[in-house]
Length: 81
View 1: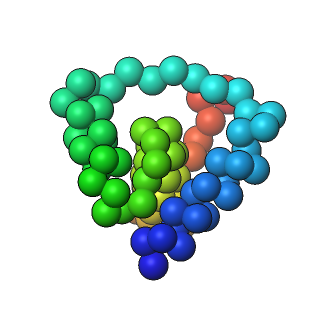
View 2 (view 1 turned 90 degrees about the vertical axis):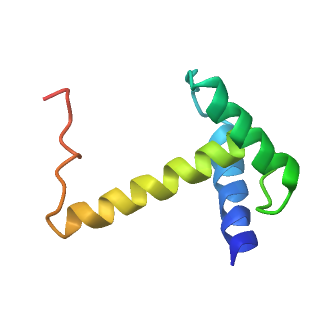
């Protein structure tokens, strides 16, 4: 199942990166080092920091969205209103 999720992430990245705009994020060095250890281990199938961060972020947003649909969270309000 893990590899299937990663293929989904790779497809997502492939489909969104051709016209995508990017932002730079700063994360603590210790977190970047942990991400690098995960990638280097090869056990979870990630090939780059970007791939891991996109997948983890997307999954967390999906989780928050699911919680929101159950009335547990109200994070989707736009700050542009």
